[in-house]
Image (cartoon, rainbow, N blue to C red):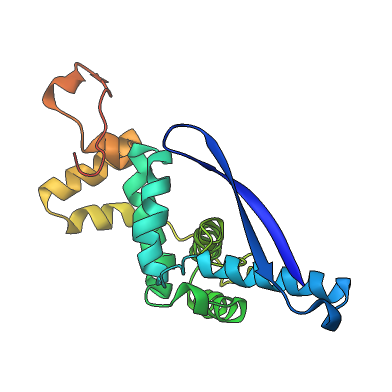
Length: 222
């Protein structure tokens, strides 16, 4: 039994030319119509698979640097971009750096999250869960993974967050241990309530009598 099909091809002169092709499935006497249809589907599927280029194997770290980061970093605020990148690399990418994408599974990710919860705060574990899920979801969108193994990760219980702070009696003790410059920086932080980016961007002409003008901020040390 033969199956004939045709497709249009554009000629150099702009005219369309219909080209017919015939696919031999077997002898009519040996096949029913249902068997012939099934054989045709299998043949088409096999030929289609040959045309699909095999995706290169990538590690989690490679995908983060070469695919995810270039696509997403411009969406983050310039003022917090480097901090965001540092946090992702420290609390997520660093833990999965050399693992091949297609070898990462849900069980391994959950065990990693559980181990992290034994020694880290909730915010640290949440960074791992959130960003591993986001990065692997992008890998799915780019057809490097069939599904996201981090999609159903559970947030494990973590140790209680450390909310320790200096008391009014402890502050003079700390100030007394610091050199002049560092002591001045700490006093300005405590008294004026400045953010680090505002404090380290101050210049002499920002002082106007008893007033302080905040018109600049440091970003990435600049």
